[in-house]
Length: 199
View 1: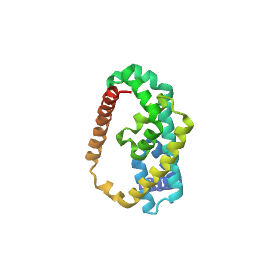
View 2 (view 1 turned 90 degrees about the vertical axis):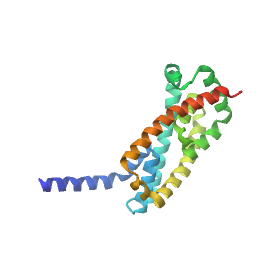
View 3 (view 1 turned 135 degrees about the horizontal axis):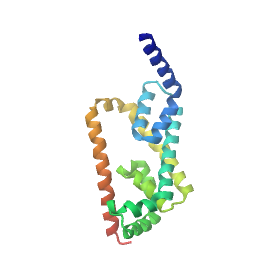
View 4 (view 1 turned 90 degrees about the horizontal axis):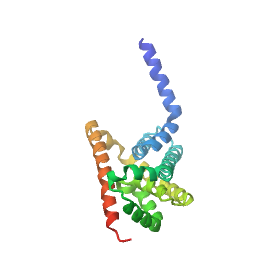
């Protein structure tokens, strides 16, 4: 029995080593920044090479951004009609948002990408799809932004990654829940602010 477990652990370690870049790509697509930090830590520890890690993380990040854009493009209107009232996204607010985003869409995307939207990146990416920003321009800006963002986060992970291990698991869960609640309140605040703009 002990040999079977040892053999299983060895096989798992081999699989993880062979699949590490695919796992980093998948993690970057599904989660993003935490996986990028982890990539920086792994690079610092010599467990992964910089270039394949960097490009796997960029690919996952860009594909994730494309998914959020597509969600807004093909499903955003239905979602807003059905659930918009929960975040105060009235037709008037959406029209003002459309005018604002049409005027400043490139700047909004660049700032969102380089600051991870200050907590609003997903709603911004969905909104850009919903408002039909040029996909070519969207893809160009998000790709360039990913090159900068991923590199910066990897460097931070490489330099300061061991700090994450000091955060207790319960505090990590509490921060995740606080982030979700903040996301909902943030959407409401954004809708309220847009409704007061004179556009």
